[in-house]
Structures are given as structure tokens and as C-alpha cells.
Length: 418
Image 1 (cartoon, one colour):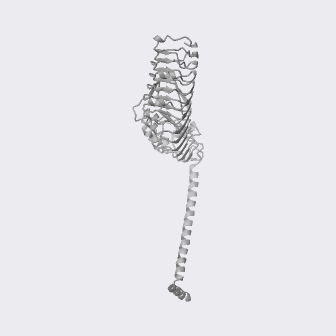
Image 2: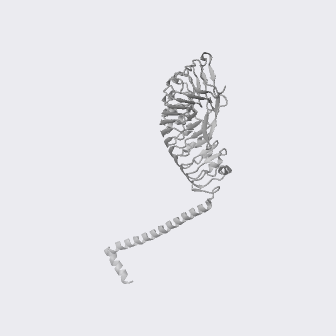
Image 3: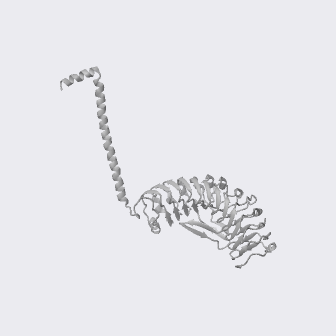
């Protein structure tokens, strides 16, 4: 069915499952749209407009999927009456305002609200949603800090808060999310250091038996290898196996913790656009599953670890605009990456050696000459100071003896015979 206007009441007394998704349906949702018996309702990917009906849904509703329409206005408080609701997908619409406080909604496993204009903080009622696996609030106008209770959602596998106005530190409690496969807090105002105890992300370390997440009727876009990748379900279920951590474009500082290398199941790691300093973890080559690594636009220093060339799966790398120095590690993998993107080292004026035009041998010789010259100058000053000190010491001893009566007589006696 395509291109028709949804205006007639649905015979809800006999309907348990209704799927009108991807049918080019247009117009406002009818205000008298009562479906007291419907358990699963799919109206996604149409051209529906207007606000949500105040009486949409019932206590029997398990899944409500309305993503990719042009539905506007506030999310009505009435939706909280759907206390059996497990999946709510309102992404890619025009909703605004705060999400209502739905303390009754404790059965949620999936909450997808991305690409709207929602404001306020992360809905606090979610701290009681212990079944929650998928939480996507990206591309909204949410603000405030990340509450520590987020770490209590121990079943959470997917957390995306990208492109909001969140501030403050990343709470340490977030590392309690051992099932987490996908973490995206990019494009916010987060500050402070990266959380320690990352080894507690057991799924990302590959030490967990957690399999790929399955999220019913979810559409997903993610950033990897510098591009936006879109995932769409061809059936009613979208299977995701995307181990990813994206904390880019924030105001994070401090060093990259060495234990981040334990996340060897990660496919994507993006820490770019922060104020991170110190060295790149020297065992970064242990992250053998990495396909995309972006550490650009930070304040990282020191040499590029030689182990980086061990990442055989790496197909996208960006280390540009840091303070890295020394010889670029050799290896066919890094050569291939440079041929794909010749800007991966740009902005690091201390780097040298192939594939760059700066020759390490000349630089090292110059640096060694400067070092030796400074060393020779230091030796000269050392011996000059030693000689002056020796002369001054003798003179002080002589003056002391000169003013001693017995020694003065002896010195005069010696001088008479010189």
C-alpha cells in the first residue's frame, strides 16, 4: 500500500499487529486513533505529520515504531500509560520539549529518540529501566551532565549521546557497563580525563560471551573511518556487531590510559578533537581488531609506537595535528594507509622518515651534533670552573697562613733567599 491518507479508524478490536511502515502514507495522525488491542504498531518511514494523538497506545502496547516521519510537537504524557512498552522508536522526527517522566515504563529494552529537537536532561526515569539495552538520544538539544546512575544500566549494549550539549566529566560509573558494545558521546562539551578501569568494558575486551546485539525495527547511522555509515533493518530486526568508542570533539584532557589497549575487540576508536596529551600507548598494537583509529587534533607527544604497524585490520588512520616526533614506524600496513590518505601525519613537525620527505638521518645527525656541541661546551665550563676554584682555594690558604705569626716569619725567611 502506498501513497494514501491515513484518516479512517482502524478496527482495533481485532488487530494485534499492524505494520504500515514504508508505504508513503501522508497526513496527520487521526486524533481518534484508539487501538486498545494493538500490541505492535509500525508506522515508520512515511510522511506522517502533526502531533502524536493524546490517546495513542494502550497498556497492551509492546512496540511503537514511528521513526522517519515529520511528526512534531511534544511527546504526550499519555504514552507513559504504555507500561508494557519494550521498544519505542521515534527517531528522525520533529519532536521538541522534554520527554515526560514515565516511571511506569520499566519494561523498556530500546529507546530510540535521535534526530529530534528534544531538550532537558537525560530522562531520570530511565534509571529504573534495568532491561534497557539500546539508548540513542543523539542529535538533540539535551544538556546537563551524565548522571552516575547511567552506570546502573548494566544490560546496556548501545549508548549514543552524540551532538547534544552535555557537559562535565564522564562518570567513572560508566565503566560498570560490561555489556557495552557501542559508546558515542562525541560532539558535546565533556571535560576532564578519560575514565580509568576501561578493562571493565568486558565485551569490548573480547572476554565476554555477549553476542551481537539485536534491536527490533531500529535504524542506525554511525561514524567510522571518517564517514557516516547507515544501517537499516531489511526485516524487523537489525543485528549489530559494531564495537565502537567515539569520544571525539569534546574538551577532554589528560593522558590516554594505557589500559585502553585491553579493548582488543574494538573496531573503531575515535578520540580526535580533544586536548589529550602525553604519549600514544606503546602497546596499541594489541588492539588487533581495530579498523579505524583517529587520534587527530590533540596535544599528543613522543614517538609513534612501533606496535602500530602490527594492526593488520587497520584501514583508516589519522594522527594529524599533534606534537608527535621521531621516525615513523615502518611496515606495509602504514605505507598503504598513507597512500590512501597522505594527510594522516600532517601537523606533526617533529616526524621524519618515509613516507615523509623529511629525512630522519639528517635530522638525527643535526640533533646529535647539537647535543655533542652542548656537551663539549659543558665540559669546557666544567674544567674552567674547576681550575678557577683550585686557584682560589690556594690563594685563600696562602692568605690565611700569611696572617698567622709563625707562618709569616717562615714565609719572610723563605722570600729572603729567593
